[in-house]
Length: 499
Image (tube, rainbow, N blue to C red; front, side, top):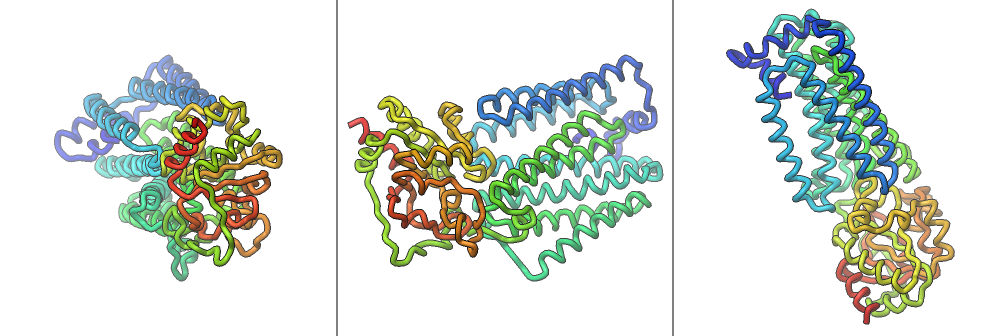
């Protein structure tokens, strides 16, 4: 990206990039064996991408899958740098060092509770990189007075790259801001919201078609930047906290599509970029579909229904239980209930992540297993703030993968469970989803913790969940509340079991 930007600068920097312009008009100047080697290497990289994504389907193989895909990307980068004419390896190495330093700093310093925000930002970086490359290529051609050589399909692709990249960049910043608490987590709605968004999309598509017909109209490129950025705001702010996992998946798909568009408009179209971008775009769309299915809602409902509250505590529903009776236990009583159980199901949620209680949960799990008590974990697809959030936290503390059961698997176990322990989860265990047609979570498949002999909910208060509705589970006859910070409470329960 830096090389392309420098190619648009005046003076010596532009002169240094003159070879790039020549490369654009000299296809086939490489020996045949170089072209064949490049194609084979890109094919190997694509296969590694696909295989790596396949291994991401299981917590047991996800880490190796990520490594395999990274190797594929390394192959694609090395081959591209070797076979393409680049301005200067000095700039490329400098950019790689800077990017690696930023990435390493994020990965080391960001807590697991901040991982959804970081994923959102990474999606945004992909979007802004794509539109910068597209715009730089347009400026390079404009400087060389070659805009008339842009074919209609290239002009259309440039427009789409800016549109998708702009929405991805600004939308990802909005999503990260909501998750971090910098912006309000509640959905922000306004009159004529949907018609205005449709108008914005229509204007951008018209701009893409205009570039295909007359690519010399530079003001169309500027207009696409502005409107795509506005759309990034207006399409994301209506998404409430309860639906943010779907928003993250969708933005991930957008970032892949933007990268694929970039691959088409380079002077030497890059097959690896096209394939990798298409894979990310397709897998993101599939994951978005899976997340919507897990909530039994359509994508349109997620984008425009505005379900959610200001923050993760769900203040909108606080004390909505009225005169209903709530029974509570202390850690010592909880320890006795656990010791009298033969099968325990633990259902983690975002509250466990906030309290960083996964290590305390691991210690309790080991104590219970040592007493020959069967312990299973029920993972809901939308628990937490991004897909797989709970799996990552539990894998971090070496909970065995065969103990992590999905929604259907764990529901089959709950009717024979002596105890269901809910740690910070709320909407995903709310029985109202099964019968209350007026509830925003009606129809969403839930984990049936209320079917266990006893259910204990560890939570700071009776506050509603992210969807802003009170949880009927808190007031059921077989439910007990363990009020307090999850890490502190589980640590005290484990100490009581030891004593």
